[in-house]
Amino acid sequence: MKEFLIAVILFLFIYGTGEAQTETYWSTGGEMIFSFANIDNNGDESGNIMRWSPVFNFQGIYNIDFSDNIGIFTGLAIRNVGFIYDNYTFEEDGSTIEVKKKFRTYNLGVPVGIKLGKLKKLFIYGGYDFELPFNYKEKTFRDEKKDKFNVWFSDRVEQFQHGFMVGLQLPFGGNLKFKYYLSNFHNKGYTESDGTKPYENLDANILYFSLNYNLFTPVKSYYKKGSKNEYY
View 1 (cartoon, rainbow, N blue to C red):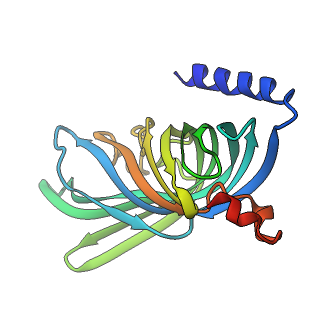
View 2 (cartoon, helix red, strand yellow; view 1 turned 180 degrees about the horizontal axis):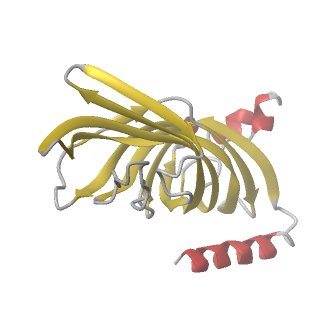
């Protein structure tokens, strides 16, 4: 599926570069993320809580519009992604301990996608997102105490994250996006210095929906009088 999507986008790019009406431009936008996770911790699938991350999420999108109805896009994004696990369990001194955990990474992402519809009004889009986690943070809440740490380029998570995205661009700049990560969040093979593997039995695939604004509105429209109205 991934190879097919990339092939279609490349075809449209090659085809579109020969059309006189092809338009290219940059657009930018923030992203307010509401995330969940499909969790399986050694058979236990409960304990997930919605996580809200309004900062820091920034996207720069390079658009190639072949006409008023079809286009493709790529770009760069910095994204705050994670999940909350309310009943994380582990063994300590022969007893099973249950705590609350918050996990998150900052990721550098590269989207590749296609847009279909009225590109200056209302359209749908979809594609694939490739992400590199560059900062990992973990918080533990136990007995009214909080412990936390963060690590740059940590081996605790999969070094390459990826997933599908679909979205709806609304008139007046509003945007709704849904994304599902095919990759597991944690590196199940990660081993602590004492030989334990804290994530060995933990499977977690993140899914989220996000609210965006002016994600596909050209940056140049902000500097040219009246041009922004074309996207309303």
